Amino acid sequence: MHNKNNLWLPRLLIALSFAFVLLMLAAPLSVVLAEAFSSGWELYLKAVTDHYALRAAQLTVIATLSSVLLNVAFGLTAAWAVTRFSFRGKGLLTTLIDIPFAVSPVIAGLVFILLFGRLSPLHSFLDAYNLRIVFAVPGIVLVTIFVTLPFVAREIIPVLEARGTDEEQAAALMGAGFFRIFRRITFPHIRWALLYSLILCAARAMGEFGAVSVVSGHLRGKTNTLPLHVEILYSEYQFTAAFAVSSVLAAAAIAILVARNIVELAARKEKKSNVR
Amino acid sequence: MYVNLEHISKRFDGFQAVREVSFGIRRGRLAALLGPSGSGKTTILRMIAGLEDPDSGDIRIDGLRVNDIEPSRRGIGFVFQNYALFRYMTVFDNIAFGLTIKKEKPGRIRERVGELLQLIGMSGLEKRYPAQLSGGQKQRVAFARALAPNPRLLLLDEPFAAIDAKVRRELRAWLREMIRSLGLTSIFVTHDQDEAIEVADEIIVTNQGRVEQMGSSLELYQSPATPFVVEFIGASTPVPEISALKGFDGTPPGAGGAVRPEFVSVYAPDEQVQYAHTEEAIVRSIAFRGDSLELGLTLKGLPLTAAYSLARAPLAVGDAVRLLIRHLYLFDGGQVRLLQNSAYGNGPSENFYSI
Image (cartoon, rainbow over all chains, first blue to last red; front, top):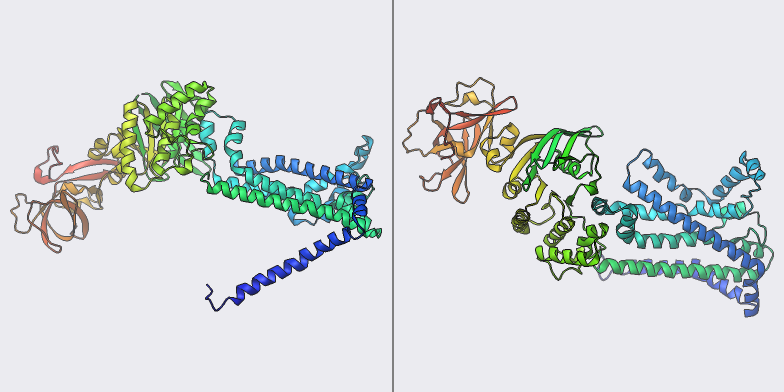
């Protein structure tokens, strides 16, 4: 498409892309790291191992793990239902799965407040059994699940659709049960897509701020996740500590990106090695 | 009858795929379900396998009604159109799959898979994955996988459709010999009449969800039961108005039919003609067909095809020749009758295949 004298356009575009990434990503990230370590290792370690920081990290892990687990269950179920059965409301279901992507997380949080909060008719019922959802851990887990709901289903549906049902039918005809068919035929085909979507889901769950912020109530040591903890530290002018905790989140995000690339690479390699 | 279908009907939303289909296949026979796409042949096959349920009618295998028996308990081996080999399993695991489910002992499984690999001529390739096989090899693995649990009935859905033309011929012969030597009752689906004629003992012709006719390829060719079979099996040219042809003037006006190339005798311009019922036609095209020539002719505006021996006087495009239509098929309300030119008198026609 380009002749040899006309290399300025690709060069310009590549340079612009790099400049953009440097300006928007690398610069802020290095600021985070520089600020985090600006007062030395000791303060960094102190900020990171602070009781409230650890509790926040714990809650983030809980929310992330539960959304990842629920996503596997829901995503696989929905993908299987949508691609393997024909039923009324299938189009509606696939559209509904996408809603969390379209709705602002803050609104998602508000929805849960309205659903389980003081103004809700459900509230008196929940109160009677001493169940706290809003401004408590269950609320945080719920909104995190809500926000990450589409990840697995979105990733698996096209993979299952492209593959067809022939192999599963062949296995069923030979008398294989559902679990054997899933384990030996369906799962090997979707495992990379599944892992990939789980990694993205974990990244999103870990970093979620808006929805969690609305339902959290910001109770230190109880309902704070790491992103919320960073915000509180920052608004209290504890800059070093805020950046130190941020650097932990950033490190986790980078680790996840590396994991994603490894998964992608492995999946591509397997495709090349003829097992298609 | 080993396999028996009685008044089978199947409807998919808004579409009658199969209507009142009945037929029977004897034990050890290899039958073809032949028809154009949408004729219901694959649906019939899938209902025998239990992959679809008929809305009405009975399916019997070896005397036992199988409608309510689970597909996996019907004793059927099924070869899918694109083979549906398990792509994440080796050739060995593919063939062994059915046996593993039946909880056969590992030693017995190895023995049986080895046997089948030998049968399909693929010993030594058991560690390959399906993607590392050629189309023909895939088909043979699919065949072995279907055979492994010793089915009593083998069903094959368009078994040659995914293979390129060159290998297809070879595989047809291979599959036919293999099935015959095993003596396994088999039904396969195809839209290709050559394939059905070459491979099957009996052909069931389907059209618009119905069985048009069942019989050997010779029976279908020599005594077609319906206009569809005339058109679908072998070559023929439609004739919209039979009474306009010399020697068939007695036919009621408006009746249509068809003529096969070998029903037409062609006489060169200077040849002696012994019959009075010949008509003049113009040669439009000449094609070499191996043992004879195929002439494209027009007779009073009607296009016809005729076979012409290589030993006869040579013809050229544009020549005016004399034609005698010795026989033709009269379509009579879904039935087919063979009419003989009145030049032969009105007796029953015999020996009409000699040119």
